[in-house]
Length: 136
Image (cartoon, rainbow, N blue to C red; front, top):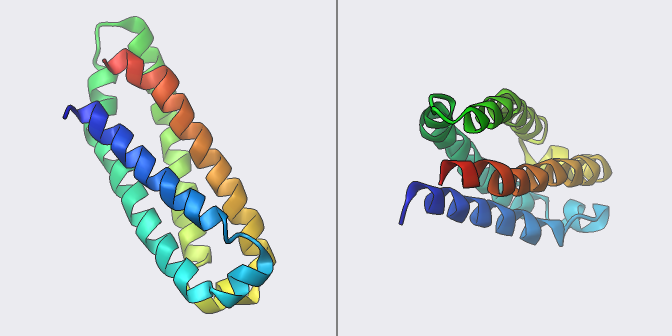
């Protein structure tokens, strides 16, 4: 299994977690299941942050150093946006750091989580459609 296969597998794992969590994203369910949702969110954030760190240390530097001008340009653009996703994820994780906060503001949590998952899904789609083919 190559490095890109590993990145793609990680994408699928994180997206599967997001999909599972999305089935519970209504205020009543979130309020009732806040501890389990917080635990799932912690697991997902940990996996995603590890994935981002691996890309930062391996994939992006390799593509940015490429002799292929298109690969360099696309990688540089993605890398510039990359920090934004990591920063947003860390801020989200900190804001919703405990089950009591999630439970107390379930509606806000639902709105923010749906927005974050949308950004995540779009990022994965773009990486796999635009960036990974250049790395292959």
